[in-house]
Amino acid sequence: MLTLWLAQGLLLAALLSSSQASAQTYPTRPVRLIVPLAPGGAMDAVARGVALKLTSGLGQAVVVDNRGGGGGSVGAELVAAAAPDGYTLIMMGSSSVIHPLMYPARFDALRDFAPISQVTTQPYVVVVYPKLPIHSVKELVDYAKAHPDKLNFASSGNGSLIHLETELFKSMTGTRMVHVPYKGIGAAYPDIIAGNIQVIFASIISAQPHIRSQRIRALAVTGATRAQSLPELPTVAEAGVKGFAVTQWYGVFAPARTPRAIVERLHGEIVKVLQLPEVTARLAADGAEPVSSTPQQLAAHVKAERDKWAKVIRETGIKGD
Image (cartoon, rainbow, N blue to C red; front, side, top):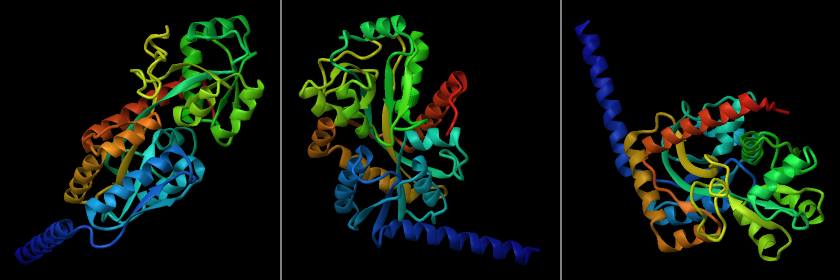
């Protein structure tokens, strides 16, 4: 028995020593950053900007690998099953928290990932068809109540954050609007410009060109504070819907059981990236703000998001396709 205990102790010491040594030399080869959505979107743009700067900080290439599909579940499942060695990371946002609440999934956003740092937060902007007599959130609520089920609102898919935040808005204001899901919110802009869709809770980066050209009208932003890129717009809460606050967010995660020293190294490098003036300026232009959270803060944020949207799904009766 004593021999067995000694052998187990030596094995544990060897494993700890190996882990510490690998963390001290990490990374020794390129790091892959999975984006669980298609190329060209807002998350992809943020991931590529961060990866470029991380490459310099880590001394190894950080390569973005788009693995879209299943509302982000394909990429998330891949990383959840990857070796916890710091060489496969993922950028996730609200969709990776919401999707398992509505569809079968082989991953859990809290159980299967080691949080590293939140990267951004970005509000949405409420936009309407400009020929409607709606110039404020109050007027939108009044019009929707006077014309129940006559306004169509677009989303980037059933169960997407845009869908859920609009359902939350409807619930909090007692209004009724008809949901029209699209495969991507970009496909909805021709329809709102033509008047077939009347309302979108849109990403700022996608809506800004149409707002500037006055092809759509912006009413408010959905965050708890005004957006730096649209400072003239009030928040939805300021405009009368007290307590309403929704933001998209992106964060970087590793597989669960990734050594703490590697997580700390990655966290430190990401914080440095987010403090660079050129990165801050680029994010601001896209309607986003940098967020350098600790791993513990990111874990708490994910839990809060999951609880919030689980309640919305339960209370509104939203079902998956």
